[in-house]
Image 1 (cartoon, rainbow, N blue to C red):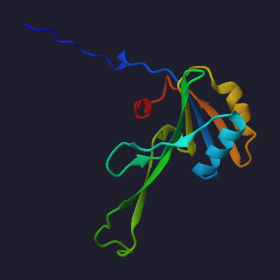
Image 2: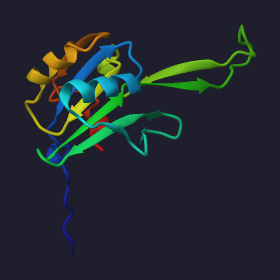
Image 3: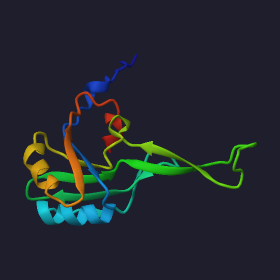
Image 4: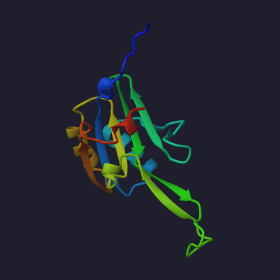
Length: 152
């Protein structure tokens, strides 16, 4: 008779730093500025982060071979078109719905994930120097309810 192994949710603990960035910059402009001011080499990934068939989030990544860490910039929101509802006030107009990768931080347009703990303090200072960056915060991943969305 075989043994049954139960895997606990905490079995896979991925520790990383997560920074939220609130800005009006487009993703490509923010990537350019992050690469310039932090000395990164972020590039658009060949694939997006797909949660469902309709919901996908663009991502930019860089594998820092020298320091053995991965950097990932994710767009925190995704807009999807909803099917028209019968008897709607505007039947010919499409309706849209917004989805957030980390709903607890809807005000953050982008998320910078660094696969190493305790990286945020110095990086935040440099990010806040970028023109049009309104704010940047270190997000506590221990209490994050949607942490599973960031494990890929």
